[in-house]
Amino acid sequence: MSKAKFVGVFGRRNSGKSSLINTLSGEQVAIVSETPGTTTDPVKKRMEIFGVGPCVFIDTAGIDDEGDLGEQRIAKTRQVILQIDLAILLYTNNEIGRFELELLERFKENNIPVIIVHNQSDIISMDKELALEISAKHGFDVLEFSSGMLDEQEQKVAVEQLTSLIVKGLSQSPFAEKGLFEGLVEKDDLVVLVVPIDSEAPEGRIILPQVNAIRDILDREGVSVVLQPAALENYFKGNNKKVKLIVTDSQAFELVSKSVPANIPLTGFSVLLARSKADFENYLKGTPKIDDLKDGDRILVLESCSHHSSCDDIGRVKIPRLIMNRTGKKIDFDVVAGLDNIPSPIKDYALVVQCGGCMITQRQLMMRLSPAVKNSIPVTNYGMTIAWCVGIYERAIAPFLKKAE
Image 1 (tube, one colour):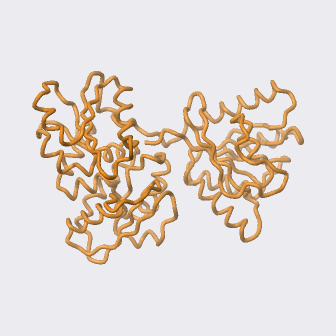
Image 2 (cartoon, helix red, strand yellow):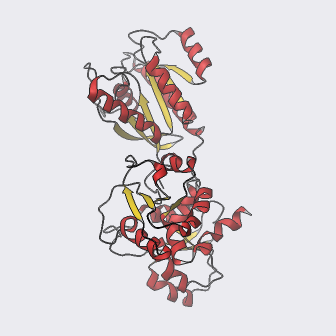
Image 3 (cartoon, helix red, strand yellow):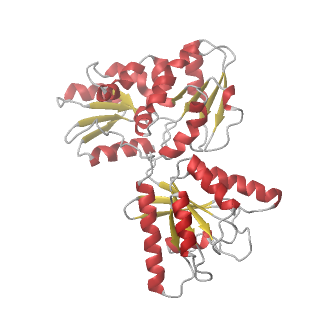
């Protein structure tokens, strides 16, 4: 589960987007030049902001770029809109035109909080009456800013003002993730985490959802025990402390369920992620549709991060095999890694299977699934798919349904 918030910085060429990010970070992150179009592909900079935590700032290409290559750059800038939690829109010379208005409309359509910045105000000061008019018309804060202030104290105040607006905007974002164990684990509760160390486990470490699970339990002052599936049965023989919940890698669902007494709640890391990233209701509706699949149907598998694919890859090998074994149907699968474009019209698919989404934000995951949801195409995720196919789906979702009653 990614805790970082994504902030996109937009504006025309030479509006000072790169300079603004450099000023905020205190580093020379992005190349600054008087030559229009210096920024081509989006550039990312991660920094900590007090009151928010980690934020990723995305420096985008100018929205007024020209030519065939310019159109490609603008297309990438528009793609960033689907990934961000907050937008900073720059304008200069007191000019708000069609480029800025088009972006503002896109931000509103996607429910993105916006800060409008009159930049390079050391060259031409902001027209305060125009700024008030813009703010009233569009409902966003407007700030005067410059990265070229000679007075160090003035520059510090300007950065503090912009930072405070960023904190305000992100705190108002409708896309807030739940904690993995929110409403499930309290102080002194014991949670057993079953972590297989197999060919897909990264060398010398465990995967992000498992790390986040341990941290979330600690934050709630609970107790976590981490072990491999082979040690689970012996653990119950020698332990009398009541276990509140067992969480396993979804690929070990079938094996672990045989070792865990029926009275102990059991779920998977991927199911926890589905609940924490707020599309759980659509997953609950979509998962049973696996049994409605027909010969010739196509399934879209969405991996949210790029990784080296092994011969027994979960998304590319195991899940297709499980679904076809469960349904007995001949089904075609398309796999898309990262946040790449979907290869075919979404209506071509009978089902969308999303990975846990541990490397992307809740907003990015929701935007990734929104075309399917809007077109009434069933959606599910890796863990819930596996639980359904191996016959322990009801048990895997039970801990969450009880809390919802």
